[in-house]
Image 1: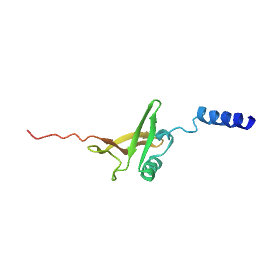
Image 2 (image 1 turned 90 degrees about the vertical axis):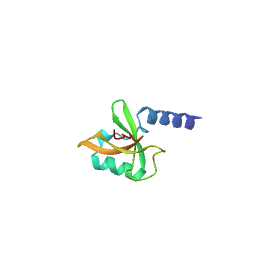
Image 3 (image 1 turned 180 degrees about the vertical axis):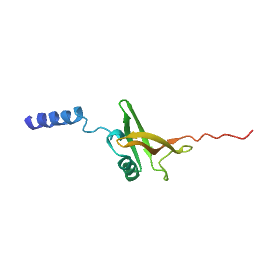
Image 4 (image 1 turned 45 degrees about the vertical axis):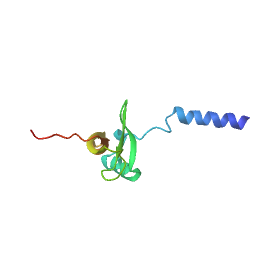
Length: 95
């Protein structure tokens, strides 16, 4: 019983300290952020105090139809960084 209590306490501490927190783009360089997304093909990343999003590779099948990878900027330790997230394309028709 004592071992179970210690295990539960350790798990609670890890959870409370954010051991399972999302990677934060603000703590990484642009190159690190892009490499993380490329390596995982898609990743949910924190981008601000209360914001996060799912980012994907530029070329791949990580987006559900009809969405496509669209370029956006996110804050990183070394400035703004271009990454991709899935969005529905906006089509404009000529008049």
